[in-house]
Image 1 (tube, rainbow, N blue to C red):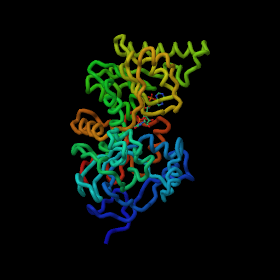
Image 2: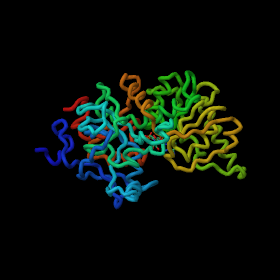
Image 3: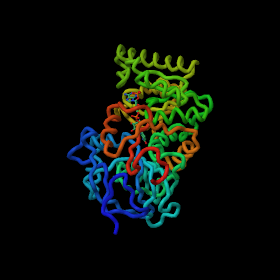
Image 4: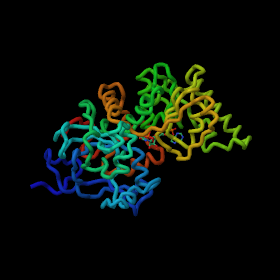
Length: 414
Ligand code: NAP
């Protein structure tokens, strides 16, 4: 008879689904610091729907979605779902991971029990009218972030994902390497290659904010691999070597400048001139780092409030600032004159479609891009790992959590 629950790291016989699982739960009454908000509790294993598979999670990647979910802001994702009639009063975060297909739902044709997969972080309704009319699924009104807007993410022994979220795990990658890079890798891939004609071309200078972060580490490598010239921004000289090793031409330390934050009103001449001086000096520093007087054709944005105005300013004429986040705040100001007079493009970008996601999996699988795993923590330290991200104290690169993988370094089921 099947056991009711297994301990993390204790693998049931292939295909045997216990009734309960351990999961890293966020509850509304403990929203706040991630270290306190996220706790391991037993819950029922979720049911598998049509077109879905049940995955035994071996490892999962840590990213900002879990921080926001734990803090209950900018959205109370549990309250939002309860309002829509969802019966669950908790949230399981985790928007990327690696694992083994443990059960297969009706209508799944490309996956079978025992397959090793990496999972992408967005879900949509393949029968949505806009998708049928040709809209990219990531821009569909049905698109939701798995492990954030949608419950039952990867910080649990089992999770349910749609078939198209799954990509074959490259055999050479350990579970934790496979589970840590796709969020930042696929999102930055879409930012850099998803918005023609502003795709990275050989010789293009590209400015990468947060070069040592999860997204930035992948972006530097992607730009470099396709012949562009990445210039990374960091807040600490100790992160320089990491960026250079990944292929950055050079690194700018943002702490040497102090014009960050909301843009002063253009009519407030003194304050605006002071901001402009800072932005110009930052632009000159990019030229110096690049070794030539060329401005970035693409600026990979995500800090938002503190940096957007500068990104638009330093971007080359007819270039593109492409953003996927507001890490430092959601109110991003720009001086429109720099946008229209120099005919720059400000582009929003979110997650990645199946083709873009697969491209990154293939590049990492072929050993051309490093998954940049820098920290691996056990299942019980999911909250602590998110706390590090929240405080920007995590090491350069990506962080993974061992969920059912009993130890680091495994590429197969033990
Ligand atoms: P991360 O590993 O924490 O890296 C973020 C980097 O941003 C940090 O390393 C930090 O580098 C830099 N940073 C922090 N505050 C900053 C500020 N005020 N000004 C300039 N730089 C600042 O996070 P990540 O995984 O790379 O993700 C970055 C952002 O992208 C997050 O907001 C995340 O939610 C978002 N994201 C969005 C999607 C999407 O689909 N829309 C997908 C993945 C990630 P320094 O301190 O060294 O400068």
